[in-house]
Length: 416
Image 1 (cartoon, rainbow, N blue to C red):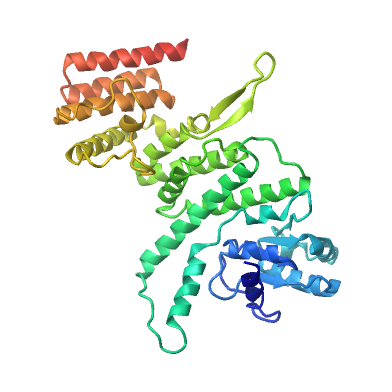
Image 2: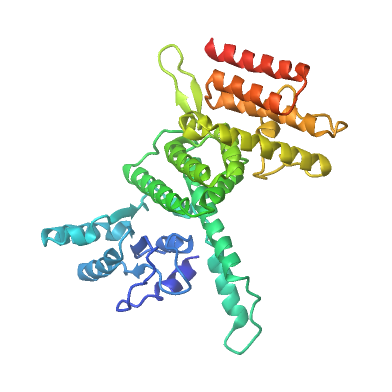
């Protein structure tokens, strides 16, 4: 990887025009091969040519460092600097401010890449290489300059969607890698520089993910990426507030777009991911604080139309599952889960031998009212919803009584 980094270091000539892509937020300045790992990891969001990269030799004079740093700052965003040029970079920032040019560089963040014994270089290998880059290099090699066969290219819209999905996956995976490096807890790792660096990465990931969420399919991509992490780690530690904010934003988008399926998956994820909080006084043992508690105040849970749409979707999925019993919608990382399938309620799904729509409606209605209680819907609203659905679909008295008893038991338990 170091060799590739050195090759890429020559892509941007010192006098070349800066890239015009406004999405570039991350720049790199340094003299060590491990800085190149960030370049290879996708943080510059670069195309085949023109990335934010300035290579400064270890023995370079301060003027060379200052000039390179100035070119990167002019492009904006976060500038990562290796340890050996950090002092010169800071002096350059101070000099610009003394000259009254602070406005030009407002919003630029300078982050030192830790490479001391206290913060080992291995921390710079947290991120996997961006797959689209290696694929683009392979395609260029396959085409060659000798008129060789060109690779079959996907349609532009499909390729763009795949690249965006991979980017969202990489950003979410980065949040979880940082948590894993800290051992999954809230405690800050040793070393102020390392901790500051990790917080900058968390902030950078969260900011970019928040921008992705504004796209029409952004919330769905984020929820699917989060769901893929569910089988790897559920204690999100220091990433908890970042994920909570992103999930609330995703719910805003889903509510506006009526993306009921993504909201249902978010409900399941919010009951899976947690952070461990150490109790005080007589209860020193750690307790789990689930993401559910951070999103219970979202207005979507008070939207009666959402719960009706959720019920219709869940019934449709159960009927489809019954028609194709070989497909388990709750297997693996399939995001198409619903309350009736993940809530593990005492009544479960209807017997496969009873393939009537009434069976699917009854079992999924139980899952929905259970989820309504879990997410803080008022007891009166739950009872009214249950009564209305039972009346509209002529659910028989015995089945309605079972559901009503379950709702009453949940309400009593919640009040105790």
